[in-house]
Image (cartoon, rainbow, N blue to C red; front, side, top):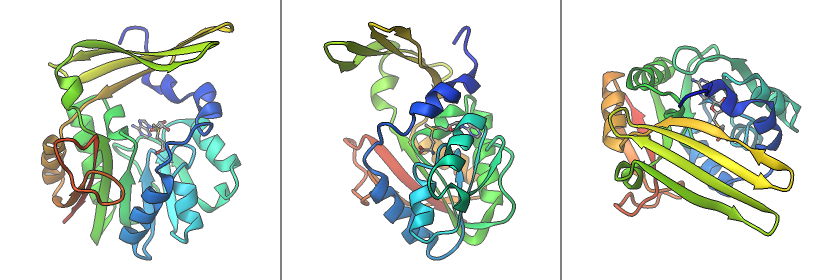
Amino acid sequence: MENFDPLSSFGPDVAARYDDELRGDEDDTVAFLASLADGRPACELAVGTGRIALPLAAAGVEVCGIDQSRAMLDRLRARPGGERVRVVRGDMASEAPEGTFGLVYLVFNTIGNVLTQQGQVDVFRNAASRLDDDGVFVVENAVPWQTFGRTQFVEAERVTGDEVVLDVNRFDPTTQLLSENHVTLSADGVRMGPIAQRLTTPAELDLMARVAGLTLRERYGGWRREPFTPASPLHVSVWGR
Ligand SMILES: C[S@@+](CC[C@H](N)C(=O)[O-])C[C@H]1O[C@@H](n2cnc3c(N)ncnc32)[C@H](O)[C@@H]1O
């Protein structure tokens, strides 16, 4: 995307508003991850403001995290319980907090924020290198089927009397890069929310896992261990050695 810095997607403005509207699946996510951690320490790649890390820590799991956005990490530290999550700032393709973990996880489509296949493979390799011998790597990612069939589309994300949010997308199938801008129109003016993502199939992620020495253990269509079917909007995948 021209005139776009990927780091700007999670700057101070976004961090300040990030937790205003939660996804609503946080309790299920925490229950799933706590059962896999099974008393062992966990590490969240791209921990953000702690949407998952904070309730997971509150559930008794020792959690640490990495994120490249100073603004998102500042927000995490300022939230209640923020002091319980050890965080470092850096690139999840090459860095992580000290130690090895029974669980490393990466949720909310964030593998897609790494914009090359090589970079995504590096994330898998980095995650694998931080796992205990019987540790697991969990990724939650949207399926790309609908987008793979289109090169551009606009969705009305919110329509109210005083505000409209348009989700404007362009997809390049040769690079699998989705250029997206959430454009908010209101009496206050126009606000841009650009983000780029490299979309992947579950099968491509399985191959990345294999390159990193991991094999698929479980795959679900949601955090409640729903079956993964052609109708599933996302997958929750668990790889181990
Ligand atoms: C959609 S948010 C998800 C945050 C959190 N995991 C959650 O579920 O709410 C994406 C996060 O990924 C971070 N991020 C993107 N690319 C990254 C990278 N290469 N290394 C570390 N963090 C990254 C961003 O700064 C942002 O905080």
